[in-house]
Image: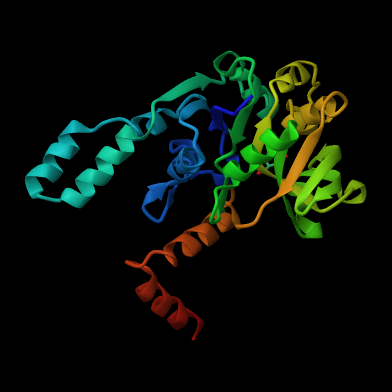
Length: 287
Ligand code: G1P
């Protein structure tokens, strides 16, 4: 069965970004001039999926507003004759119909995915974590959907990380089946230094078989007392194949102030309207 639906998990508390996340959802932090959530939505759309389910929580309504129509802004731009901006604003609001599901208690990523069960139904689906942004020629999600269709098992995006960073991610052990593609043999969420089995870290893109919902339902609280998707995948693995795809492209972890700043610089340096002056400025800072 083809993947048709994408679940974007936007329910996290954003504690690594306090205090700004006291009142601003972290998904609304800007990368240059558009919020992080927009890049993720665009990745979904360019991968050929248009059915988006967003798992949100209290205080996240700004995100829904963002993709809504703003007639008075459109009228203002029309009267000003700013056709370019007007077109961009219309494109944004026409982009998607988002179906939102609320996660009422923050019980972990696995629990957040389970919240979307009724909206997803009995079919494979994509999961995206907006903290992770991937910039590459072909969208990472599109590559993973092709792998799902060919191999017929859940697919997790992975990247090799430095030894000192393994404790920040879910880590997989795996056997290579093709170039950049592995069959997963084990998973562990944020292992302690002495238990790190490999340097293949899970990045926030998944194609999941619907069997994952049953697996989550029997997953006990794990790391940080939360119901972890990584632990549910370990349970799924006993029944079905799970693959790991080491994608090409630049990966930015925007979940911390430093990662977010790096992503801002990288994206700004790709913008022809900003890059030349920014490069000059950065040279000046180093000099
Ligand atoms: C989540 C997952 C983790 C994964 C990470 C990728 O952790 O639990 O396995 O490596 O996303 O960003 P979080 O960053 O939400 O703590």
